[in-house]
Amino acid sequence: MAALFDVGSARLRAPTGLFSPDWLYYRKRLWYRPTLALSAGIVSAFYETTLPEAKLVEGLLSPCWVNAHVHLELTHLQGKFPQGRGMIDFLTKMGPERGTASPSAIRAALEAALAEGTCAFVSHQNVPLPPQAIPEGVIVQPLGEFFGLRMQRVHARLRKVKKWGYPLTPHSFYSLSRPLWRAARQESSFPRSIHFFESVEEKLWLEKGEGPFRLFFRRFIRHPRPPQWKKHLRQLYRRVPAVWLVHATEVPQQLMEGLMQRFPRLYAVLCPEANFYLFRRFPDWRFWRKYADRLLIGTDSLANSPSLSVWQSVRRFWMSGFSWEEILQAVVETPRQWISAPPLWVRIYPVGKEAQILPESRAELFIG
Image (cartoon, rainbow, N blue to C red; front, top):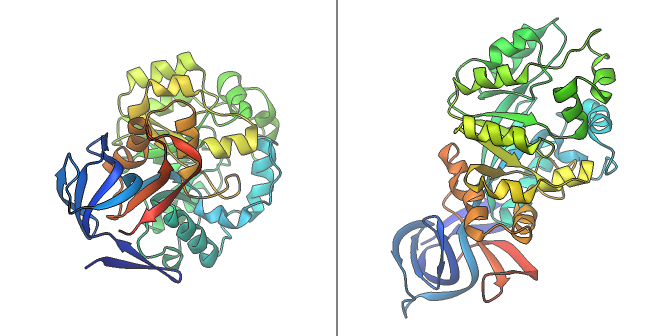
């Protein structure tokens, strides 16, 4: 028998049976033509060789994937904003539309991602996430994102976010007034997920207190000052299981090297498709390969990414020199330290003789 999940009009199953894929990601490594026994998606036995009674499966099989950074409340904004305009333009245009995505739009985007094997999501929320927006078979961990530079009404804003019952996280190091930073320093059982060196504009502000953010922040406070983000990072780090620095595309290498060495529970969440859409920049792939065991992968939102599926990013990482073990650790093992995922599997096919991604390769939820 197979466990069934209703996703839209489709019937999706957690597979049951004896399977022998060309390649299998299991126990943090890639296996060639092993045999896997599944019961409703849960591994009941594993053999390093192909058993004659096993069903042959073309391609590469992996546990389903986790998208570690999304903004589901921006799902309705796909194709609405021009590409390559930078952070200030994006923030200005996105502001009035934030939090207005319909449950049906969110559900459709999650269903499409699930069909490609992305089954769990960590979502920054400024409004409550409607339960009807989440399809069966999908897990979403919402985070209550809070921000605000004005001193007025900060406690009312924070009370509103706390009321939802989500773990709290600040948007970024540059977006909080002093009272909100006191809230950010509180203990949390879930990692703090913080936007960090996402753009050149943010880099100029965090490093020198200069650039377009100085003018932008004058809309909210008379004399904006760059944050003491190194101090804030130390304070956050002491009270949470991990800190996730999201994007980190513009962080100087020497600075990031020092942070990764000093803080062993510091992780980076890379969202390459979103960063290229807004800023025409990719992460420094060579640098991040040194810290492959400290990486997660996200998409950001449909306002700046083609899909909530991480498949496009998986392709991007592979073409940039990462091994399958490094890539799949980032979307399978590493996020599962903090977020559970359903017992579903994803298949990539066709793949070449050495498990290469081909132009025609695609990812799909594996149903046996």
